[in-house]
Image 1 (cartoon, rainbow, N blue to C red):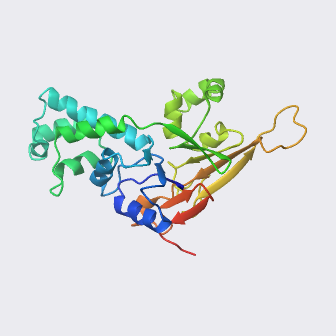
Image 2 (image 1 turned 45 degrees about the vertical axis):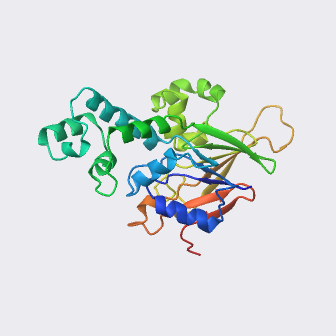
Image 3 (image 1 turned 60 degrees about the vertical axis):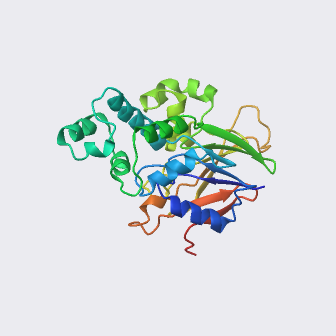
Length: 280
């Protein structure tokens, strides 16, 4: 059994399946952890949502910020239907100017994902689909841990921080836009390395593409870094004073216009990295 980790699929279902095949993923015996953001921006959101709802064997979906927002989009759609603000024929609201304006006002559909799902001719959807998706995604955990070949891994969407470290820095973190620890898990960027991590463990995350202008920029390849933690009274480095970080979001959904963008996954047993597009 092998353990694979991917992140930020963003509606690129076909690309995900192609990479899993390339990496040798066996769905019957291997484990796959998807570290958040299965929807938005891409063209195969329906396929990703249905994939999650099938609860495929040995696949763990984590909560990402786009997943978190999509749950609220679903809730807004269902609330409007329940209150009869719009009809159950969701496609009808795209044809009715009044209902469409109400939809645009109440559903903050930043990436057009909900509208794309409703308007699809290939996969007609209704309120019960949004209810299924909401219920399934609401069960996504925020953090999982694995120990593989004697190494400890923490998988999260954006940044990991312990309860103790969050409380110690809570005033500053709340000011920076993380009102609770779960918001840190799905939204943190550089703060994930500055305040978070865990000694003796590797945090694997996504959220900030390695094609973006940030401290994680790495030409669309996986970003790996270590941070040495110094403590008073330590006489020697026994290996427990190192926090390790791996960012596996290589910006897959931007491949159509950014030549550096890619999709990556990592196999924890040997930390081998697989890319959808090999460029070396």
